[in-house]
Image (cartoon, rainbow, N blue to C red; front, side):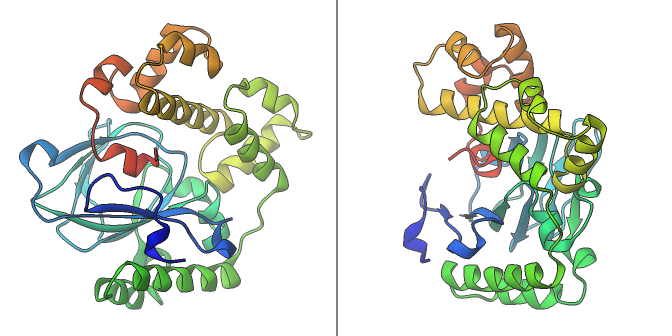
Length: 283
């Protein structure tokens, strides 16, 4: 894979890249953002849940994160960003330089054989997860000469992690993720009815491996599918979104959009946050 395989460009400083075929079951995509001169309007960003954890490497000034529960703090320069369940605020300084790995929902468990729920709504220093090799990885990425070299470094690290620490993914968890992503208009109950396992056991396995309860994951994925539909079809009526994605009614959809984005659809798309589609994976 080369940087020319990027999925899309929003501006000259942002690009997406597909993983090598053997890592497609672990990585959704890579993306980078480099902007040395952020204007005042773009120094704050409201980020919505994506349903995917992430590895984020920063090479500039630290970013401040502010959750809706008013807990704030600087995020690490290299971090495991677990699933988020709410809209969060990021505050940048004068520039942003980062390279990120958007993972598939249960990749943290596969890579590190950990309980993914321990990372939910957390930005955890990568050094506390892999202390033995973290400094080498970050230094090599920081000193790399381009996108392809960074991707090669990351993919070598991911392959070693999978080989050494691969956690066992329940076929039912995999089936559930595929069902939710492939059929976002299906109700949660109809998907649950297709699972041949007790609800309590199923919910425990999914939360352990994905980091979210099955119902929360279903809601977040459906929200992102609806978000993407509106973004890519500016003339689409909200009532059509409600029907297509199986929301109970328009009020239900607006409330859910507000919960995950921080504002109503009408308010949000009047002045869409330029960074949120990258963090949320809406490409």
